Length: 263
Image (cartoon, rainbow, N blue to C red; front, top):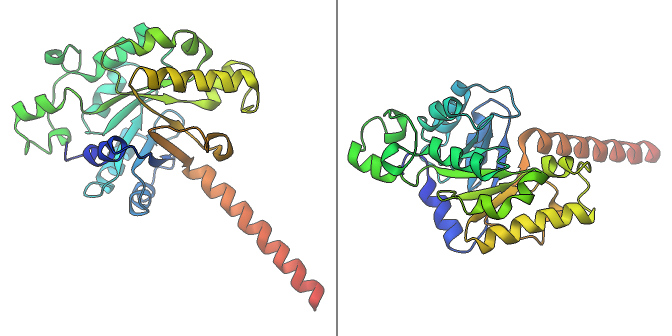
């Protein structure tokens, strides 16, 4: 719906292009504004591994309203009462971590949809229907597939159950969590390991075969360069800043060293 820029994100994906974004862990809303102004197709606002509160999330959603950047929010866990207030903020999608079984997947879908669409979501109108600017009937109709229900596959148990999970109706997208996934195999960050490669490619291939949108965190650019997905989070804010600050400092020290030798 117009409040969350989902239409722009879907237009990019449906055109066959990959949508690009970044993970936001810093709770300054200027980070989401910066990402949107830089041309990112989406931001992944992370409540699972950051100190931000729901008030911070609301400020971030407001900061990019009027842009073409779609806000996704990763909730801490697949619990109805944690999802409910996030849904009421009107995000373009919710990312639900550690979906390891079809039962958990069904619970995630139900938590994100109203009873009229087969779900268990509590009804409220606030920001998600543009402060009642969108009529209730129109809003309820749109809410059957907005926001996107994005389940995160990030554990070896989920890989074992992947066919049954993907068969659950109402899943809009799969999000690969490569670091948690590799850690569940006892091989954290070892993306050159055949078992990890096979696990990730199994998720990718099965998801594409099921006709479900595919995305994930792709910070390790060398690994993901030739692995196509509908959407890719290219980096997280803190990691990107740390990497580039260290690189800048290293280059500056090298330049200063050369200048010192010339004196």
